[in-house]
Amino acid sequence: MNYSISPRLTLLIIAAMFLLPLMLAWLMYSGALNFEPASGRNLGTLIKPPVLIDWHDMNPVNQQKDTHSALTTAADELLEHWVILYPVPAICDAACQQRVSSLRQIHRAAGRHQSRVRLALLLDDTSTGETAEMLQAMYEKFTLIRDPVTNLRKALAAIPVGAPGISETTGGIYLIDPLGNIMMYYAADADPNHIRKDLKRLLTWSKLDEQQ
Image (tube, rainbow, N blue to C red):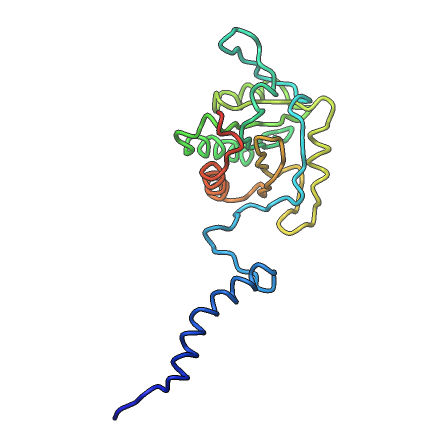
């Protein structure tokens, strides 16, 4: 049996092949069609708008000497870097220590990008020197900080609880860009691989800290 397609139908098929991608692109641009490839989605919760902080307000607990033998400040250590921030509870129990350990693994997994990333542990005002020593012993590259004027804690409190994916503002983990913007949030029990994958994507595509 011989089937034939009329010239008009052929033209319609060719026209549809050209016009359909244009129509889909316009729908996505206009917002009428919301599509985002799974590989491009953030695994953490994007904070909109980002909350700006100032590292100069922080006091370092583990002051270190730089190449000029001067004590570094928290700003010296954290400015112009991607920072993973974890507010440590007053008593860092087994669950807390597990989270801290997972942050160490995330930093190690950054490989050649390790110098672009800092791990900041925000200590509770009532935490003891023993807690600080224990945390520092877990990983020498942790930056332990305190918030004497509470500006950082106020910034965390300004993040809207109840927004999609955000259920708390004290026990979670935060990703901060090199400009000092708190831009992403992860629940305390989030999969560490989610943080690692988001960070890897940002380090690959971002130029905010390319001078480092």
